[in-house]
Picture (cartoon, rainbow, N blue to C red):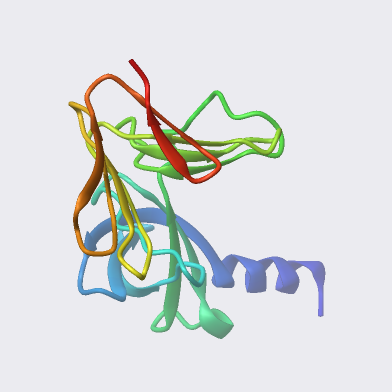
Length: 161
């Protein structure tokens, strides 16, 4: 196999394009080299995303070089958190301030434009709103409500004044 053959093989397998639209929950339409075609939307296990249509970069893989069998990974390269430091991970909505940041120093930062709700499978619930915080027990009874602030220390809720 010559170097030219290897380059053509790689060129036939990997493509770069744009996501045109969502076809269904597993399929997206991608546009590359003036063509529009359906592709399986690949996302790693445990993650689900729905990127803005007509605005997201698609890395397209043609299975065994066959253009009728495409898989695409989508990313939004225009909206990124430029404040990440080496070793940090950002999970969030790039076009808003809603995000979770896993910091290199071990901290976890959670930001939201609205409510933050933490709930266990058993039903314990901590809910922050734009006006304060509510902590509920397993029966839905409100344990703590605060509009001024809160602190949880060793499992005890303390309302800050």
